[in-house]
Length: 391
Image (spheres, rainbow, N blue to C red):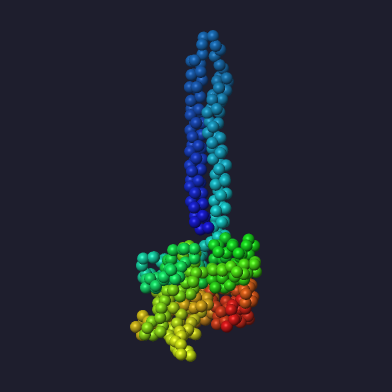
């Protein structure tokens, strides 16, 4: 849909330019014609008189004016018709332009925080210059449906497309998006099972949105159909971007057991795989997951490339915000909410009921501030949302 809208917009603008040119050229020509006949009406009469034979009656002044008027009307009438036609097309052009703008608004949402990227990720280089300064300005809001980080070169080179193919053959990029999805309808590839009347709202995190899609599609009788909102590495769409998992982009550091670095956030801090170390469990070596991440999704600790220094970084999580929901460090859920007054604030927050195969619960759209129960509802009384898998 994005490419279709862009192409339609381009040709609409081109069409408008041609019509405006047509309108002004014809209007200018009409003015010139009227000016010409106004200045030369006596010449027209004299010319007619000079062509009369001696036996023909010389026209009176009134008859001469009538001839002038007839000639002028005949000459400019076609110009007037062309101008009128251009005016009508101009109105049609304006109408089409309005329709295109409305379509873009519906498909991509209103402009502003959330839809914009915080950084640009180039395919042939790492993100070198941070664009967010939390050291100076404190915690900052992050893009919800745009780039919050870029995949580093070493991690980018790890992905084996034979083992971890993209959905529908999309070309991989370095884009790491925020946690929220733009919405799922039957128009999205692989989502036809939703039918015409069902959808998942814009502003739900990708994991919860995927669970809701599976529930709705199974409810519609598609029990045997494999429904994938994200590929096996946690990415999708065109342009391709990652939201969660990242399991094809990290390994385990041999010395520390810590997951390796995946990318760099817009604040310059690292994004790493989920494990902060290893331990033995029944004879098996398993990864240790952190239990001290803040609401932004970050924590303080030693990483494989921090030279033994304690740094603030973002480990990947199985729950939203997956990488980061804001640029930390941050002290509380409320401090996070204060960064998003238009979506998390008590006056403007939009709370929706979401049902999955596990149950029904409340969810605040476009609010990336989740508490220890993984709920983002203000004054949460529901505990762990029932739409999530049980612990």
